[in-house]
Image 1 (cartoon, rainbow, N blue to C red):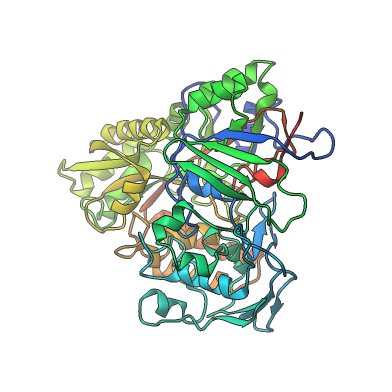
Image 2: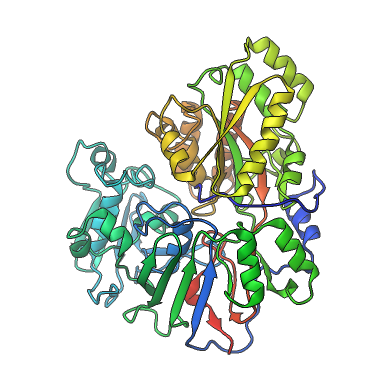
Length: 553
């Protein structure tokens, strides 16, 4: 999902054509670690203080989409499953592995007894049924959840989400601590989906008495922390949830998160000791990372995360002149990805994939040989044969941070070189998401993706399926390939493994051939963390996991 663009500034250039792991390993060998070994046993107490460059607008799990999504994970809520530090699903609110029917369409879960929300109220199966049904609600305010389509896997969910039914019969409460899910068809990634933020458990009796906006500002969850105060646009203060069901956690008494802090100021504040770290490891400027890497005092502050960010171009196939496949192919062949790496300060690598490296369906061959390789001469020839008459093409980009602005400039130069009249238009991430739901009013835009879970099904159903590309859907390209959908539908009922991966790769290839989506680059994730933060690791999906860290005295 797109969760806030990342800022970079120019520094070193990475050689293109190598495997991504090799690229980033050579660039930061000895300068950043995947995790930091703890010195001694965990201790309790103290205040952990971090900062994010992005804004935080909501802590409603059905709505949070940007840096608020990052901060919400590991602080306020829980689900039946959670993803461990390697991105694998493990039991969370579920007391034991589910009972699964022979046809894998019926899953029955027993909940932990005695789990309490931060207001002291006990969690029940009815709360969980309410929470997941709420994600499917077509009348949810301020908008239907971005997870609605993903959750249309339960019997009756699609009818409920379309307003044709009042209940979801596929979500059943058997008793106070037992919930059953009946699926339309087997879903191999169901544990991942049940770990999604939009499937977090909420207290029905609280949510139904508050407006959506009130609950978004004053959420009540089962997580390790609860909100003490929130000054929107500047700072959120959390304290330990006294009812948290994991004995002994969290270790810190208080968590402070500063928001809307420029990336260069975050680096300075970490190095001065004012704060403990950068919350989103993809927001730091390349120059600040390079400076810290070369300084013996601060090189040990750098923690490298996995490669989980990817950017691509969305070409709206319903908006002239991009409704012309020949012109779309010209655009795909005009992008100089090596130049974009330079624009991003070297903290990136060219890609021809729409699947990030942690997805088992990622195809390294596409990074070496994209479906439409860089060929500006051929691209210019295609522009001429397409019948393009010089009409303006507007490239929209999220201007929340400088990262996408520099990327947009590089793309504009590439497209002008082949004879296209491209104009840049900055927008906020939120506005761009809303604008992109319509077939008209939007032509070309930059999109940033990071995963919800490590499988290609995640990004396909979220961005490439026909359902999300329909009028009103969240995908800005609005391209529909029923054959690709059929491949993914077939894969979705298969067990995880090579045969399923092959089908998802075939679907990706068809989507790439449409030139409705043009891959750009992978982005490197590096967090800056004061060594006093012990037990630190960077989660592949969520970044900081605040309940697991403690402070060295």
